[in-house]
Image 1 (tube, rainbow, N blue to C red):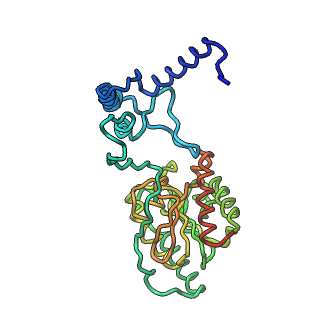
Image 2 (cartoon, one colour):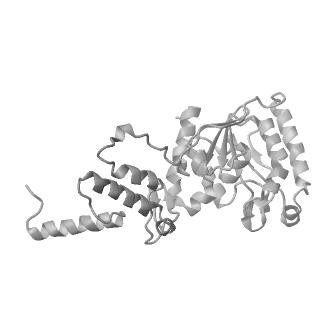
Image 3 (cartoon, rainbow, N blue to C red):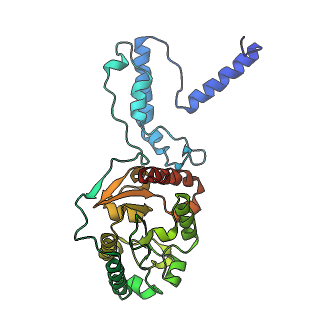
Amino acid sequence: MSPFQSSGDILAASGELLAHLQRSGLRFVPNSAAASMASWEQTLAAQFTSPATSAGVTSAGVTSAGVTSAGASEVLPENHVAASQTLAPTLQERPRDRQQPSPTPSRLTPVASSSVNSAPYPGVSLPVAEVVTALDSLSQSVAGCTRCKALASCRTQTVFGEGSPQPRFVFFGEAPGAEEDKTGRPFVGAAGQLLTKMIEAIQLKREDVYLLNTVKCRPPGNRNPAPDEVANCREYFETQLQLLRPEYIVCLGAVSSQALLQSKLSIGRLRQTFHQYHDSKVIAIYHPAYLLRNPDAKRAAWADLQMLMKDAGLR
């Protein structure tokens, strides 16, 4: 039975379809003649590549549900040139005879696993008592560090790290915040409380893991650490990891992920993949502070933690 009760219904539905096609960038529907089809293809290509149309393409916000446009801006497909080539093939050319261009990778498409250094950790694994002694000695060196003049002049105290000296899991953040700067302990503010819940959600306890940051001093105004500040602290966090030798390193946020993996890729590209740092498996997830500001990203973070749990046999 037809869903249309009258000619008016058909006209209304036709109007809605035409409006949808116009919003999609189609201004007319061609006939089946080969010449018209070729003309249509050229018209679409010109529309998708014209400066006026390109200027209308804006970056969109991204959530776990997908890509959304900002305001009333019309966002064209990322691969709009390829789309114009495939929407209207000519009668003389069959789709299977044409080699399709490779799609442009999305900034959220996971990359292949990377290895910073596949060699084992240097040196030998120390007994627990010696690891504790070595960490205490390194902590004292960090407390007196003045490599970063700006950070050393405004800090209350350094934040070295804490947790099990024989951890299976290390959680690696970016920098201390205000609460951490006051207490000298990592992840004790609002983001730290969320991290504790995340640790408990994968059937672990905070005292079972080790927590540390990329830099040991709070940057002014909670800004991201500068590249030279990360470089100045690299010796400290690499020595910590060498002493701890965890099976897994969970990088929290872009700063720690990029520093450890020596990459410029975003979390969206680095997540959902196991990387390698010496003997440790590395995953990158969103920082708890980011999750507090963007609750929609919690679903993605939970997917990453589930991947960790499955690999580690925690479920």
